[in-house]
Length: 322
Image: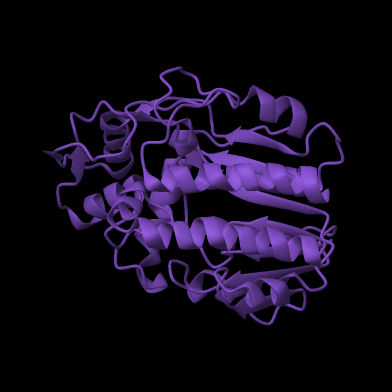
């Protein structure tokens, strides 16, 4: 199989590249990335690999998507402009990248005769639905422009499957973390921010009272879900969306305490007001992914945090200023 990974220089995409290049079933991996939120250093280890190609381009340009889809069998669409706060501050760009860009990818895949598109969906799609754990067919109203864009992606994928026969699998990620996740910038995720604060011995900021909870998911589990989605031969598994998570609830306070234990730190947190657009609690039901995709998350949150912390501690020569 020849695979295109959009956003392949990003955190999740670059981890997926490394895994796919080790699989004998994969003949070739091409990355399309504009390096807006991804980094060339994330894929520098693959440079010169005979089965790897990096194409710098932008999913907002349809011609770039068409060129990237040439000779490809399946697409892993990871490119997006993440972050709820970013989308609140700049909804136009979030829509342009996440909606127009994704529509370009779907259309280019259709025109190239590609069989399947696996795409990064989001737990933000559950919006204000109060039920826990989150089940795929029960969603509420979106709470941010970002959530709207990710839900629109799902709707477009459904229409392209029904209208054009394109297979899709959407993976609703729940708070993914691990090596190669950027700890810098205004929209960095909470775990790299906490780790960076501990390594710098500076109090991290916790929004609200710290009892907000999330289903944190280590990157290896997410890579496994993507691989299974790309290669599944189960006809019932395609044209579906799935929760991709560990299935365990962790509060921000609990997360910080675990990281302090791993680091041997006695740092105290600074509590600041809650962020607009954030949901209070999140927990995934992963039974659908287990039964139809064979998804089996093997790395626990604590074990993943240990690996991530060690990686950030050692990555000062990786150009991340932690």
